[in-house]
Length: 387
Image 1 (cartoon, helix red, strand yellow):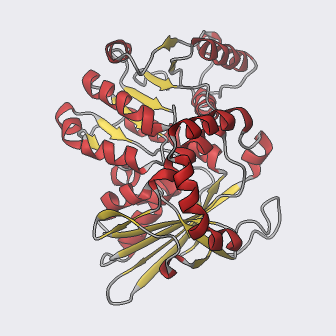
Image 2: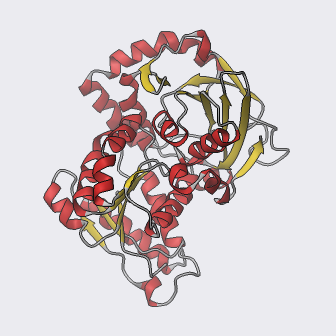
Image 3: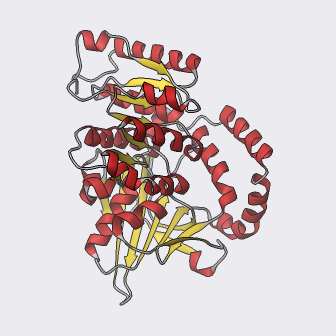
């Protein structure tokens, strides 16, 4: 890994950013760590260096490299010139500062100006759409823009690509995620920011607002057989109720597959599905009040910790996908992969490695669009459960 170009991880002190940093070190990388909060940055650098001394890094990196200090930079997204200058000696940025709807655009602009590849771990539709709007500039600059190199959208994008390949005439795509476990503060803050936008689906290639109470969204999906034993037995498979959700795949799967009608779901207890049409409009109006939304974000940031180490190690996640064409032919798939945050760390760093070695042209790319649908199947602990 030492021969790879220098790259920068922005915001390594968030829950997922820290996991990305640890995974990078395990795989022998020594990224430049950057962020706007100097105190948090210095603290996480000290902790990661202590981890290196204790043997956190893999056998791929030994001797002085393992004992050397990590480079870090204080960079603010609110200072475009300083941010651009801070990127001039790196080839790639992995951006982990959420909510990405607020932070992604300034970092993407800085990367385009500096001629630096950009990746992030967002799942927010507006961020993907903003990135695709920059596709022409990215092509001109030879810069790769690849949002969504985490749990959303690496596995779902792979499922979408594989299903579209199995049924080239597909006109409709559905994706459903089942991810048991508690979310991190960053995830909850992103949800709070996204709720006022309401439910969206893609119809005829266009993103449109939808009513979650419509009959077409009252779905059950078959997530495949249950694990016979272990901590996830009884928690992963079987027939599950789902509720429609505005996932980033509404933006990415359309570009990856060309399928114009896309609906995304999340596994949800049936009683919550029934309440959603009544509760969601009220919650949307409440969260549309900016000061209240910001207050709730601060509260969330103090209270949510995300899953612990054991949960991340033992947890599993499944995604169900289905395509159908106008003649009624269909194909389904269930993919299982590690716990969402652990997968984001593993998948994010491996996507970064692909981009570090990238020899193609620039542009806004999806993971499956860039690396192929089968790429996800080569990631650790990923398996097709049902096809």
